[in-house]
Image (cartoon, rainbow, N blue to C red):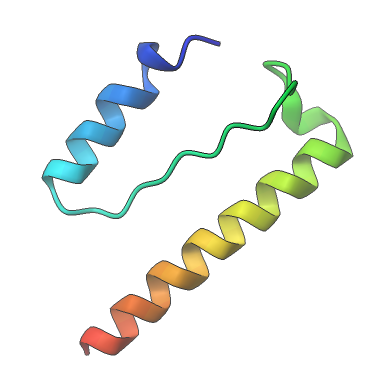
Amino acid sequence: DNMDTQAVPLRDDMSRLKIPVGLFVIPDAPHGFLREKKWFDITIDVADLFFSTYLKEQEKKR
């Protein structure tokens, strides 16, 4: 997929709003990558790391 179609503008908007955002590109993953367990597992691991980090930062601010 072309990341410029949605990912870049969305990340820019979120950054302007000071909302944490990240992008992880899975090498060789096709458009329907979530249908295959190996890419699904990578996606969950990366999302878990992102949210764990973000939520810990939010907890420190309280």
